[in-house]
Length: 421
Image 1 (cartoon, rainbow, N blue to C red):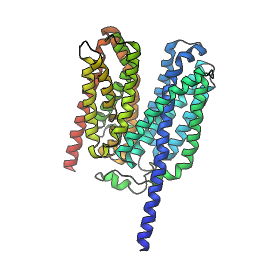
Image 2: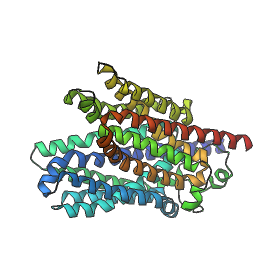
Image 3: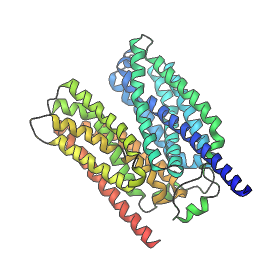
Image 4: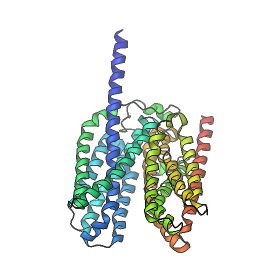
């Protein structure tokens, strides 16, 4: 009786810790999305106040992207040494400091300076949080967490809009978001002891899963997996290309969809802008919906179904018909298809490659993601200047095919490994 009572008490304690930490991570994902739309929303006014050309926004975003790529690649070593909780808290603190710094910047070079800690913090927390959730929580939470990121990214333009319309200025929007990040940093610091008390849920089947099950659930400790070693693991190259293709597809669609609808299809600019925003709404809403059946369907089917759905949307977008309805519907369908791909690729990593390797591989995946999302839109911009905007669906279609081929090859490799094992 006493043993059953003690076991019941331990289970209740674990459930409470599990739920409390999950709530903190949900808030963290919303907060992480908040700064991502601020530059785009405020730049029309910011560049005038700072006295720089419009194109200089690309310099800031490139600095941020460079920092995120570097910190993503270094995240495995840092997280193993300090733990996911510490890395998350410190990284959010870096982004908070950077945002407050943005709010106090009166010149362009100061924005560039503060963009460095912003990028470094964003990449490290992205890799650490994604791996922790992939190892410790079910697939539905990975989808809902990334939907929360989309929610945060959707809120920040309204914060910037209010700041500008009220006369407070763009700097006040950065200050508000920065202070929210400061509060989150303190919450994360307080929560650090909880991160090691949530048990991993990854199914057994890898030798290293059994070995690591004892004490590294917080992401701290264990054997360092060098970058070169992680890249040599069979299948890693396939998942990196698939992930890069997806992120390139998403970022290209976000940037160029409105221009394509207006320039090539003759859609009214206001209508095109509204439906382009529905692409992002489709991604966010799709992730909330995907969370309800992700555990039953499984990551492989979610990735496959997502790419196929995007493909259907791209075909509708490209059909040479007189009506614009199919093109507009295709954009929304493509957004819904994009929804489960990113969370499912991340969540499947510990299962495909083992928990011991997952932090290193997810760090590389984040670097691949930022590489795709940074360089694909300007690449298509240069291509369209030469060939014409009509190539937009073709460009997206090629990325869909690349993502499907790479993910299916990875699935076959994983199945063969399971049969041999």
